Image: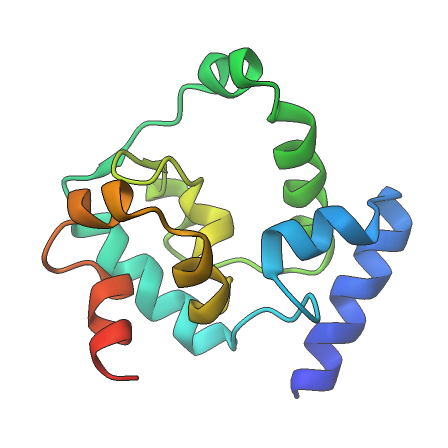
Amino acid sequence: MERNVLSRVADAAVRSKVGVLTLLEWLGNGAKPVMQIQAVNRAAVCTKCPMNQPTRWWEFIKSGVAKTIAAQERVRHGAKLVTRHDRNLGTCSACGCLLKLKVWVRLRHITDNLTDEAKSKLHPDCWVIKESDNE
């Protein structure tokens, strides 16, 4: 099962001409997403979270990361990394991450790149906190 997901990610990356660095930046070392059930469970938490705010694309454009996010989104779609909650996922106002992408990222990659300031802003029910407590 996991090999199939990795194969879809690799194929989608090739089709969208996304570089390895873009995949590593999004998914971390190995460019391996979490399992679908975990992403769905995470997304369900995000849909109820007050930190889940509508995505304001012009903010991404101003910061210069819009091309990277667009490339990551093409891979996500091409690899069929979707949840039934995607239409209700925006941007996390605590960390600034696009939630449709973040729910697929392995916890270690998230925590390794989460600043103390952003961590302090996470909602107490955030799956990042809950999963970190269970590690």
